[in-house]
Length: 96
Image 1 (spheres, rainbow, N blue to C red):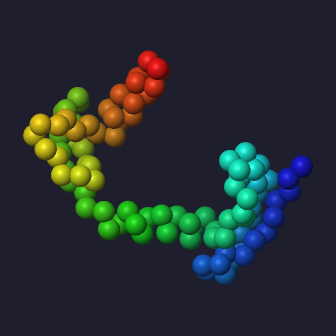
Image 2: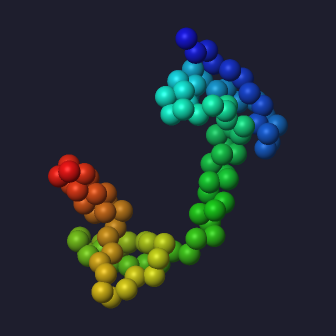
C-alpha cells in the first residue's frame, strides 16, 4: 500500500527517504503531514533543547549507583537511576 518516498529536508536541503514503514506508522498515529526534516536534522533539533538542560549528580535510592537527573535532588525525596526508575515504572504498569 505504501511506497518509499524521497523528500527534501527543509533544514539542510538534502534528500531523505520517507519509508513505507514510516508512512504506515504516521498513518497509525494519525499524523497528517509528512516529515519536513531528515533524521539527522530532527535529532539535532531534539538534542539542542537537551543541551541547555542542567543535570545533577545523585545516588540511586534503590541500587546505590550513580544517577543523573534534570532536577536538584532533595533530602526528603528519593532519586533513582534510569534503570531502577524504568523497573519501578514497569512494575507499576503491570500492577494496574
